[in-house]
Image (cartoon, rainbow, N blue to C red; front, side, top):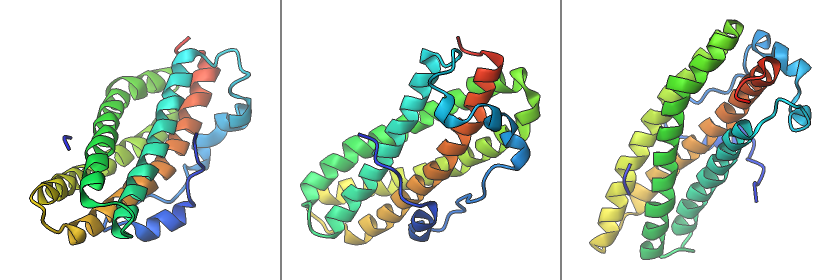
Length: 203
């Protein structure tokens, strides 16, 4: 490994499985939600400012939710004896690689392009953007740990050696990634989309 949406599990359940990383569980400060009251999630699609670029961005988030859950499930299935080592390695290489590489690319674009655009449109929400950028930093540390462990697991399986202990640790990192995304993506959407609709950005 190189570097149909199911509702995510409750954040508290995911955090319990997470390894030694700080997973933000607090909601955004109330002052970061003032536009959300005017532009609630259930009204987004009907708004004339809800354009294709925003739909694609939200679609990427849905993909990350599904993929992170699938990667965690794959590890659990291997640990439960429902996947053999070869099949698990194939799934880990493909799905784990897709998750890591796409998240790094997506967050790099957000940090260097998307967030500055939102800040320029409405600097009242810079505190919220700073929280989201901090989430990115934490997530990238976990992704690096996940990648290192995944490469080790794939290498051990290629040599027909047991990797049960490493997969256990890898599963914890996968749980942390899912927990971080659960908290982060929802907050990010509910901060960004109201700004986009209010200021008619990305039309």
